[in-house]
Image 1 (cartoon, rainbow, N blue to C red):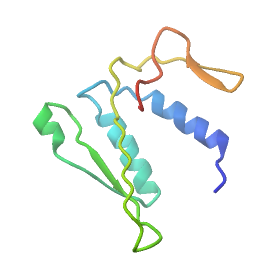
Image 2: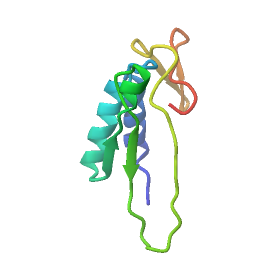
Image 3: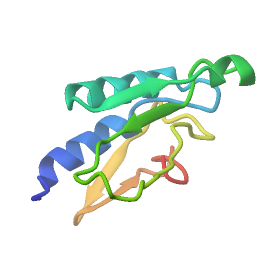
Image 4: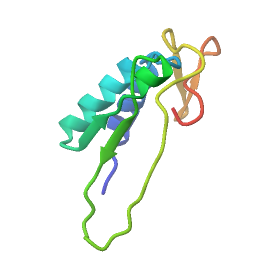
Length: 110
């Protein structure tokens, strides 16, 4: 599978501009749900928001394997950041993406 570097960069830049501070992640969850639905990938959201006082639950995304005998593979990630990314100003310098220093790009695996 060939990766389109420009499309990947555009997606990354879209994602980092979505503000999703802990407990306020619905915008990110909505964006991801729309993307997965557009790719015809099964996605569902649980009720975690009501349990933790947030505005979004966890997303479960299911991709069918190509063999009934394949072992399941589980990947985990989170959609929140500790600090706001609302005014993120990404700089691309020699193929390296970083913040202008006034905001974060994300944290952990966001």
